[in-house]
Amino acid sequence: MPDVVGIGAVNVDYIVLDNFSTNPAGGHNNRLDEVFDSIEPGSERTATPAEIVQALEAISDYESIASVGGSSLNTLASIAATGAEVTVGLVGVRGQSGADRLSLRSWFASLRIDDRHIFDSDDLAGVCISRTNNGERTLLTSPGANRSVLKYLIRNKQAIVSYLCEAKVVLVTSFAGLADMSPLLDILSEVKRVSPSTLLCSDPGAQWTNSPVPVGVDSMLELSDWLFLNQTEFDFYTNRTDRDLYHAKATSNRPMAPTSPAIVLKRPDRVEIFADSESGFEHRIFQNPVQLRADQIVDDTGTGDAFAAGLLVSFASPSISTSDGVDLGFRLASEKLRWPGLGGLDRYSDIYENYV
Image (cartoon, rainbow, N blue to C red; front, side, top):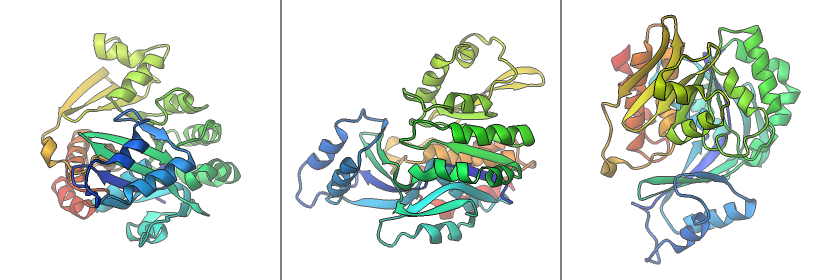
């Protein structure tokens, strides 16, 4: 059974970077602007099918890269690419890629990602169109086949619970366009009841840290042992929480409730961890030793996922400390930034060798 199991969307990412995109007709990216003008820069929005068609037509004018995507899947791929003795698997729905020369089934096999609890659909896979402009990444997403995930979870609940209970770590990431995640909450609640030692990590992303939050997500985050949040997500989550524990902790060092999940607050220059420990509350700050300059960054899509991979390797490997996991995460994320999509995976094993 896999050591780390992800639950999340299976997407095809179309990555457009204005700093190296070329328009055959010359001039400004007018067609792209028409698509992205309705989205706040640096944010993410679920698109209608018509908007996705319009966006795909627009990016055909520019250099773009099609890559397998989805937050959980990016993290699992990063873990697998390190060569660490940590096996990985995914629970989700795998649609058809719709992209030339991109076979999702073959891609899973090449990275040895266990897919026994992947449901294969004839529908098109989810789509995420990523545009980085002036250093800000904006995402337009469509759920595609991922819409079927709730039916799959309900129909296979007990088998999935058993599968997750065998894992050391379970990582949950968001699904776009689904308003009620109660079936997933039911599964995770049962996993924590049956196997409390299984670490539950959640990375809600922009989809689950914007109003309205899908039904069941708040309870899911409270059930988690670890939350991975960027600054915007941290502010949204803590400001919505009645207890406001983490915000209070970050500003005044008041004690946290024992049942509160630990938070990993991700920033480009540092990571902060807020967590209970045997000696009381801990607020640890880790400076990023490999932060890149803006002119060195090619694509930041999935950078947080690469960082999470380093920390999850430490969770699943007793010989690697949390501090080393954070450092590994920094270095994986730094390498990821130099490549579009998942282009730098073949370099991750060299990075990991320093921690063996």
